[in-house]
Image (tube, rainbow, N blue to C red; front, side, top):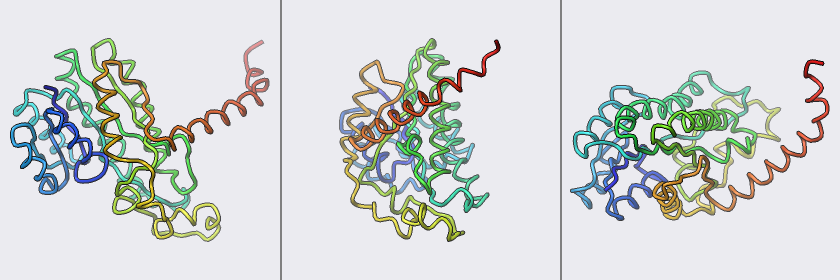
Length: 275
């Protein structure tokens, strides 16, 4: 019976994944900044669920969560770095403190979690780390530069970790969801307090107060959870798992456009080699 440690389980994909793992008979450490928000999962699965308070930006809580998982279940087989949030605003409008907190949560938090579980995974020569990214890392929409940057950083780390850990029996998978019917575009979305009118045309419609995506996303969180479990349990989890038909169509467009632009400038690019 595999033990999953999932960050950010109070709502959204994290909660759906925790529910799916537990319903399938797995063991789950369900975490949230307020553990009371996930107590119902423990009440429904008292033998296989453990609720732990966790703010991924707090090093002591990170270490305590992993220690609790090891004490209760003997170790962590699957770590899912799901906790995170969005931030809207033009790059020029970004607040330095807000951006630092965003990177602390979306990048440094997952790294801290991975470093906490890896000693155990390396000792057992088995384990899976799942890093929840976003199609935004590829699409880079206006107004989401900082958020896209955090997810691009997480994907870069995931790729290197996958190569480093594969010989040790540990798999790393990045997941790029498209739009799912969660609180991401609602409660979990933040935005800059600075507004520069010159960006109204490009960023304006995506500012939190103007965004109308919440409640209209095409993705089903329960199906996303099932897909992630299938990939992990396959024994051949991909380096990158796309979730949602919108994510697939978006990445196809991005890759096609990138290939066309690279080919257009190929001769100039190649001209920089030493003669």
